[in-house]
Image (tube, rainbow, N blue to C red):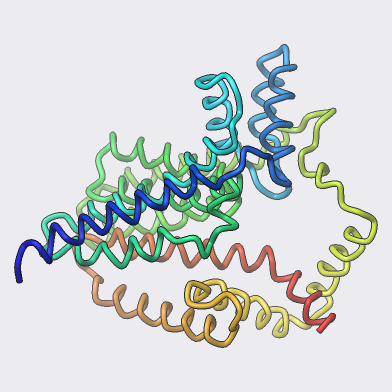
Length: 345
């Protein structure tokens, strides 16, 4: 097959799709804070500007937003403000969406040296760089959370491959950034543990000291995440949602509904939500189709993971496992909303 069709044409198409995607963002993203951005971006920076003491400033980075700690994103907000002298939500949207080229770059590393890799990347680009997920793409705070919890996690898992002490340090940094992007980012420590244990006990290429060091780092970072030291007497971001009385009652009913259901029924709701989220790439309205796609993804993962067993490189399999666990965590956190919807319908 001609090099034009296997290399240069796919590269040109990839460049065109990516270029159009970011052009569209610059044209249509709005420099207006949306919902949570009022509090977790502007509210955070306003409080930080008024803070006269370093301990209070540090607290502001780590105060929880609902059940999440968004310190990684807040660091970007702060650096953007220091660099540009203002907070521009179009700029933040573009910065958040830079996670997508990062995904592609990581996949390129894995495919390096393989024939026809540009043909493999083309459908990946077409899947990632589209605006069906406009709600996430154009809402910077959500994009920072949902995109970067995966990007940082993937970078950490990549650093754990062919591990050295320097790479371990980088892996810990990226895992920490994932942990403080979204609550589900904590799962990267578990997946990373599997990756290090695989090299230690299956491939036998690592001494057990690396496994111990990863466990120590995970314990230290998670202790920071759960530390009560990040409380702030005058500011509680999780209470700034300004729910109406009716919304608060509905939310309480959702939580009560999931807790009152029998264990098996509750698990089935969570499983249904998990499969629909996992396969939602093919449909955002047909639950049966999305769930069937989710099952297909799981079966494909099991097949390829089994094929890669005892192989020298399981980075993609670990990244897939991290995706599945992240989606499961999100499904668990959102399943009570399904209870309310089913009750209404």
